[in-house]
Amino acid sequence: METLTIEIPDNEAKVFREILEKYNIKTIKTEVTATPNALTVKTINDAHNGIGIEGPIENIRSFINSL
Image: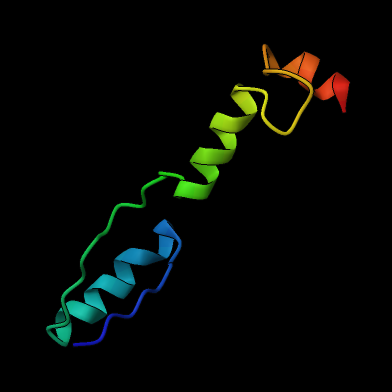
C-alpha cells in the first residue's frame, strides 16, 4: 500500500472528493499533532532551568532583552 498526501484548499476540496469517489478512492483525514520532538522538549526544559544561559527564564521580555 502507498500513501499519498495532497494538500488542497478547502474551497477546492469538494470537487476533488467527488472525483475520488467516482473512482472509488478512499480519503483518510489525519490530524497533525503539534507535539515537539525530544530534543526540543529537552532544550525548552534546559532553558527554563537556566542551562546554557545566564539563569532560568522568568518571562519572555527579560529573556529577549538579555539577547
